[in-house]
Amino acid sequence: MPATKRLRSEKVELLRKMRREPTESERALIAPLAQLGFQHQVIVNGWIPDFYRADLKIAIEIDGEVHEQEWRKSLDKIKDEDLRSIGVTVMRFRNATHPNFILGKARTLVHAEPPSKPQGKGTLPWERKYGSHLSLEARKSLSEKVRESRKRRRQEPGSESAA
Image (cartoon, rainbow, N blue to C red; front, top):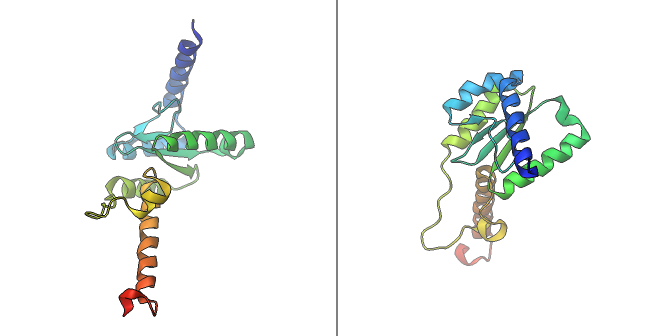
């Protein structure tokens, strides 16, 4: 059997095992997150996030004790960077995090309105500096910082708009 076909087969078998044996934390979130459009254990760019919503490109990871080990932290970092490189927002939570907290964060992202582009002004400031791949939370944070900076500049004595 060719190596790529064997690897794909091994990945699918791992996926099936992970679906059959979810952790307690995952089990508590499967149905509520499914109502928000998340799938449990799907392959995304060769990785298997615990939950994924394809249309919004949001991955949710529930990390147990194994994720505290150095080798696993390194692997998680690579996984997160790879997923982010294709525009996926990755949210990581510890196993001990209350499911309602995770659901609240997921609802916020699912129901959030993305910032709109100003008419006739081209790209947004953070897109010029950081690119358009930032997560919704990061975009909102940067947008708020830009607004505050502009407000401070308008209030400074000697600025053109203060005169």
